[in-house]
Image 1: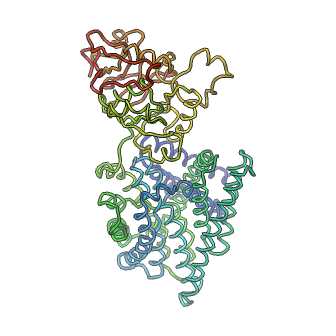
Image 2: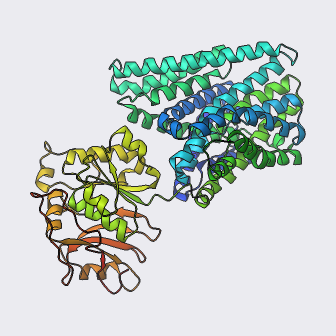
Image 3: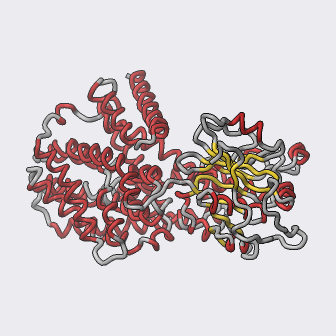
Amino acid sequence: MEHHLSQALILIVFLGILSQWLAWRLRIPAIVLFLASGVIVGPLLGLVNPSEDFGDVLRPVIGLAVAIILFEGGLNLRYHEFKEAASGVKRLVVLGAPLAGILGSLAAHYIGALSWPTSLLLGAILIVTGPTVIIPMLRQAGLNRRTASYLKWEGIINDPIGALLAVMVFQYFVLTGGEGSGEEVFIEFGWAVASSLLLGVGTGWVLGQAFLRSMVPEYLKAPVTFAIVLVVYGVANLTFHEAGLLAVTVMGMVMGNMDLPSMAEMRRFKEYITILMISTVFVTLTADLDPVVLSHLDWHAAALVAAVMFIVRPAVVFLSTLFTDMDWRERTLVGWIAPRGIVAAAVAGVFGPRMVEAGYQDAELLLPIVFAVVFSTVILHGFSIGRVSRWLRLSQEPHGVLIAGASPWSTELARALTNELNVTAILVDSSWHRLRAARLAGVRVLYGEVLSDQIQQSLELNEIACLLAATSNDAYNALVCGNFAATLEPERVFQLPMYAAEEDNNSKVVSRPLRGQPAFSDSAQYEELWRRHFQNWQFYKTRITDTYRYDDFLEDCPPDAIMIGILYEDGSLIFQSAREPEKLHPGETLIYYAPKKSGGNNRRKEGPAKDATAESPADDDKTESAQPGDA
């Protein structure tokens, strides 16, 4: 038995992580593969039967996993995002949640032909909109921050609310037999909400203060947080079943907005744990489906699922957000996207069997119907969110470039990318004076410290494909790259290379793992780029074709030219790495930096000793083609 249990655990974990990797490679929602994997190894092949394999420990473990997932979601709820989407989020939570419960219950009774007790319980469960599903969807769809905030805040806040309402309905019909005092149930519910809020806020603040006062060593911060989350969840559940979900969500929100110095590392650790738990829990729950019960679903269930997706959800969003600052495009997208996830399935899995034991026989359909909603919403919403958001112009592909550090050379690079190649280039610097030339050239600028909260909050990182740290300070460049590496991926953050002599002196350089990718070539140091800029070097572009290949270009270009980056056919750009130069293929455009060609428009430039922000007319030095095969 023990050997079989180990094999089941290994298989579930492996399938969960394999599904995550395949989803990344195929660019499809990971939950689709979770569900498919669970169905294959569970109901179809019978390799895993979680209820039998894990026994009574299954549901408590799933509950703890959901608590950690919701805490991690709370960490990612930033108050500045709430301010941007405040009126819409408030309506979706305050009015949207009750509306969803009422309309969902009506649909379950009149369309799904379920009894009122089961219908009310299903309506409460369907309030949740699955942050474990929405957040990965948002990551793939590239929604703008305001629209993404609606879905993220609604999903994370409504998850515990829906679970608590489901508990209240369950307690009324099962523990009191439907004949108890509704007033007592409501009072108990209100006490549970109040105590959970107090416990979550208090614990989060106290733990955050302990971190700020260095009362916990750095290496213990993440493990201590992990343990306290479980304790808070357990203590809150003593007052009211599933009240712990609300407590840990609020605790995460408090700690996520305390500006703790080690919060970035904690978020990364929690994200790793959350990815592992989401993967395994979804595979486990799907594998636990009973094929016999699934066969009981009829056309009533199908009609109910359709009503939930195409009638209830749009009606809830449009009614609850009337007279807010949400425009019709945001309402349309939010009204369509409402995938259900782990919490809905877990609550249905816990309460469905207990409702059947209490005499409500149609409650055996609760879990299959919820999984039908999960399957349908995940597949339809997961595959359509990108297309719908692009059609509504609420998202864009991440093709932009963020350049940290304004200098004459980086300003000219940003100008060439913006004006000649139609690439979104954002130049950020803490000196308004150094940004002057870029502003005059029509370049998008951002004034402030790139590592400050204000600048990072104002950045739409979903439009940024890569970063170049191009200041004169190598340590600062490395710090900027390290800050953005987790968001943009390490292979997409670049910094200007250091001199070989400095590289050889380990005591004077930043450790290589802490740096970004060395950009362009080993000779493209800050001072060297300045020197070439004032020698009138220019940016050029050459399109690689079937008749004019990369090897042909290398024969024709100046021997000392510096390869800057590659512009792909879809409009995205990636800088060239000095460590591993990119290989070009037909249809791609190479951007390079080389001496100005004869016959060009020579102009005077001021040296760095005179003016560190040397300006130029915006129309000078147009990016040129190098060969007949060029773009």
